[in-house]
Length: 214
Image (cartoon, rainbow, N blue to C red; front, side):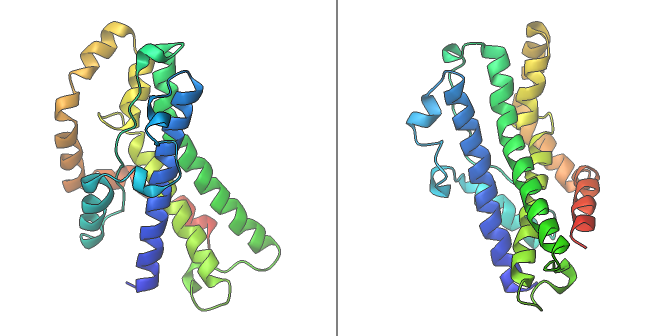
């Protein structure tokens, strides 16, 4: 793989998780809990969000294994007792990260489509061959990684954001039962990764992004 492409992937991945986690912290603060914001987690500084395994080790292993790159940062802490509406607030705090990534991916696609409309667009098949090829490459990787991160985190398996969203939609009694799944969450995710079932989730949206950049 072109070293330039690998460096762009790494940079965009750190940017994507930073936006993701900052969105969680910002939303929690807006809904009444300043815990994460007070810890500096509403910052766009990547160093405030790095998790050794989820941010560095796992993405490197996936890159080596030629799998879609995804991962997570340090969880954003929040105190539900500070929220004006704890269950509804928890749902929106969980949803904020994926929404931020989806909006970032949409913005990258929009910028590329504007460039394409005015005749300055460069297909990703010629990423580095023309003056704007580098920009097209960055926009493409930004869209793919952000949409992949959003989709991955929307999987309703603890500790991913999808579990917080689902818990907020369930009744309190059902949510308590669902929470019993949490100790097994990582094992389930590892099983999904090694059986390539995650590709079933990622493939359709990634193919859509590729079509928008060709």
